[in-house]
Image (cartoon, rainbow, N blue to C red; front, side, top):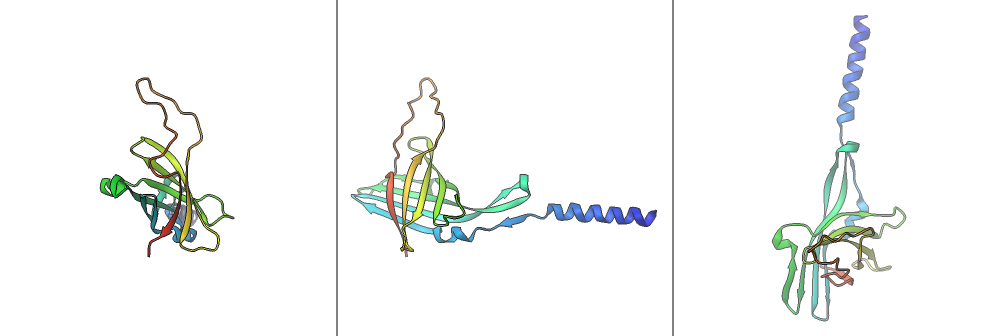
Length: 168
């Protein structure tokens, strides 16, 4: 009986230890989006810096890889917005939304000047390894206005549609 109890206790300990191991769900498809991306047109210059980060997902006892980033926006060489200076990411939770579309990144973005979140969709332009189309879109859902607060602004501080080139 003592052997049976010891064996049972040993199995329980092994199960508990193995359940605590964190599994890392890497995403090599994100690698191509990492780096500095630049848009420059009609006096508007946007620089987006993207990097991979590890995010803990305690509910599933795992970590996953996502993209986060910062941006610098200038109009006619005048600084309009700079999340690098604030040391606060303006892009977060970037991931490949559809497994069969590894060249499409969906990333959450925040516009501090308009005080709103939105989605940025970044898609590699076919046949090009250093150019992506970036489209900004308002998130779906209901928007509530607090009395005395300005109404929701559908526009963006950054250009709504940009072709970004990877800096070398």
